Structures are given as C-alpha cells and as structure tokens.
Image 1 (tube, helix red, strand yellow):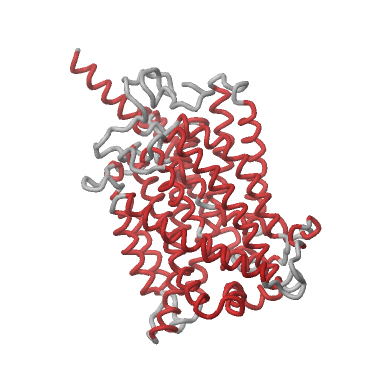
Image 2 (spheres, one colour; image 1 turned 90 degrees about the horizontal axis):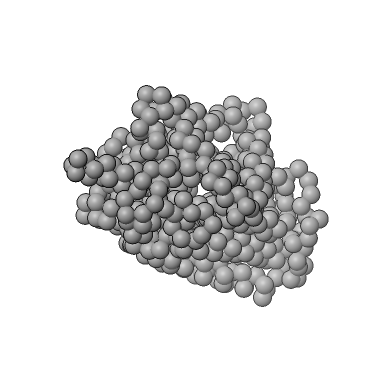
Length: 530
C-alpha cells in the first residue's frame, strides 16, 4: 500500500494488494460498487456539501449561546478564546495523521476502520461500539435541549403550552425521515441553516466590537495570565465539545468525489474555521459584557447571556430571530449526527459487527436506511423514557430534560475524545508497520503529540465528570456516566476477540469496507472460472 502519496492506496486504486496482503481486482478510483446495495453511492458530495455537513455538527450558534456562557459561568476562566486556539492546534496535529489515513482507507466507519487498520480487528471492534454509543449519545442528548427550546418558543409566540417531549418526538421523526432520504438533500438543509447561523453570530461580533462595555475594546481575554487556576483543565473539557463534528469528514469518504483530496481539505478547513470563529466569538462576549463582568453575567444569565447582550445593541427583532436560529442550529447538529450514526451502523453491518441487514442501503436513495431507522428507534425510546420521568410543568427546565442534554453531550464527547486519541496511536502503528516511518515522520510526530494531549484532556474529563454534568463529587453518576463508554469498549473488544477465535474470516474483514466485497467478488469469479 502506498504511504507517502496523496493518491489512493492500492487497496482502493487500480490493481495491487490490499492492506493485509491480498490481491485486489482491478478497479478505478475508490473501491465502491456503484449502485449496489452494499455500498454507499460514490460521487454524491463535493467539497462544499461535505464541509457544510461537517460544520453543521459543531452547531456554531449552539456553542456561542450555550457552551461559552456555561464555561464562563461554571469555571470562571476569562481566557476562553485562548483555549479555543490551543485546542485548534491540538486538533490540527491530530488531523495531520487522521487526514492522511483518509487517503488510504475509505470506509464509512472512519474511526474504527482506521483503528482496525493500525491496531487490529479486535481493537477496531471495540472502537466501533464506542463510536456508535458516543455519537448516539450526542444526538439523543440534543433532543432534550431542542424540545425545551421549541416548547418555549411555542409558548412565547403562539401561547401554546406543550411539554418539551412532544416537539422532541416530532423532531425525532422528522430527522428520521430526512435520514432516509439521500444525502444531497441533507447537505442542502444543513448548509442553509449553517450559513444563516454564522452570519448572525458575525453580526453580533461586529456589534459587540462597535459598542463595547465600559472597559472598552479590551484584549484581556487573550492574556495568558487568564489561564490560571484549577478550572483551566476542566474548561478544556467544555471547549473540546464545541469542536465535535469536524472529525466526521472521513465517514462520508465513500460518497465524495475525489475522497483522497476532498476529505483532508474539509478537515483542515473545518478545524481552522472552528478554532478562529469560536475564539473571536468568545472574545466578543467578553467585550460586550466586559472582561471583569463576563463571569458574573454568565452565572446570572446562563444560556440567556448572548440574547441579553444582543437586544440592547441589535434590537428585539434580531434577538427573536437569533432565538429561532438557535433552535434550527441544534436541529442541524442533530441531523448531522444522525447521518454519522447511520453510516457507522451501515459499516458495522457490512462487516459483520451488526446484523447484515444494517449493511444494506435504501434502494431508492442509496442512504443507509436501516441504520437511520435504528437511530430513530433508539431516540424515541430514550426521549420517551426521560419524558415519563418528568413530572414538572410544561416550560420548566426540569431535571429530566436538563439531564438528557448534559449527560448525553458529555458522555458522547468523552467517547469521541478517546476515539481520537486511539486513532492517533493507530496512525503511528499503521505507517510504521508498512515501513513508511521515515516518509511520514512529521505526521507520526504530530499524531504522537496529539495522542498525548487528547489523553490528558480525556483524563481530566473523567476526573471532573461531576462538574461537567452538575452532580456532587460523591454522586455515583460521576463514574456511572463515563462508565458507559468503558462498557461499550469492553463489549466491543470482547466481541472482536470472539470473532477472532470463532469466526476468523469475519474478524479479518473488520475495517476493510468495500475492499472485503471486492475480495469476495474476486474469489467468486475465480471459483466460476475454475
């Protein structure tokens, strides 16, 4: 397999041998059975469509209105803009190796496919279950906050009082329907919502700079002295969640035109954009509120901070539109995560980690329909369970809806952190085993630095999980919730070990994606010729 080139690897380009030394039939471009039900349809996404889908998962307005005020209020660290820049550097280091892997491995189960290619099929099986659980938790958690916000808007503008769970369930079904449709439609939906969100946040940023608080146009938030105290490490845990989504680009590799180029380009642009955009927007919040007042204001207003700062500067109408776009931004993030979960389920079904029916695509749209249906059913069950335990009045942010959001978001973010760290190690092993250590030396070095940094952040995430989810240090939830990711990893590793022992042929296919079916087809053709 080629390792120092930007071209497709031999396993996905014409001729040569696969990643595990087996002959692969002559093909052109990415190894995809065009139009067949066990492959996602190639060439359906270009750079713009993929970029919009990836950035939508980061939820720009959701981060500015939700994550940033929470970080200021809970942790009291004024230097949040610096944290976003620091994390941008860490994730750029991660992206050097991760993006290079996308040139050699094209598989909708990106994380676990890369991990299996580097660390073996058993590790890949563990990663596949972690990815499925983590992204499902991220998506389902968002239904809680979205349902609450929609019920609030209905009460404010239409004088209609409904429980948060009713709009949440309606949105679950809507997202499921869109997930069943082809990715082109989803990309357009995500793109329009994303562009409007970004435009509104930029307008606020400009307004804050033009009309600062009494301390003026202060750059105090970029002072390294602001990053002191015990809360800095935990603040990184809050901020890293804002980046979740950029790593999804390789999941769509099978559906992109020129995946060897497009995926890496989108990843680097996404990391750079998110880091700079969030750093500037978090700074704008300090300018609008004042560096000395941003923490008290965030503690007092919480998620209402952004809206309280926009109204005196941009008026009530703009603030109302911002509220509505806050909801649509969360919807866009949910839709993006839904697409990713469906594709992971598809990849796992195709390779025997889930029942084979998950490895089939919708015959009319080419979308991974069964995976989409699975995620819809899981979402309905979880939202219903939280609704049944919610005895608070409509419009009241009761514990069930609050927990659905905070628990799901932090469990999912921890899972993605660990997947990124493990993938960085897998990148190193992948290239070293193929004798490409010298050619890929700087990418290996970047991956090693990223792995260390990500593991440190993950360690602090587990250590301070009680702070992240708002429980006391003695609460069992401080270990039960992160334990969900641990259990997922153990289950996946155990199943991978079972496959290696009882079904070695199935174990050997983990992470191969369409390459496995090329090998099957070649074997079948050879058998018929014999």
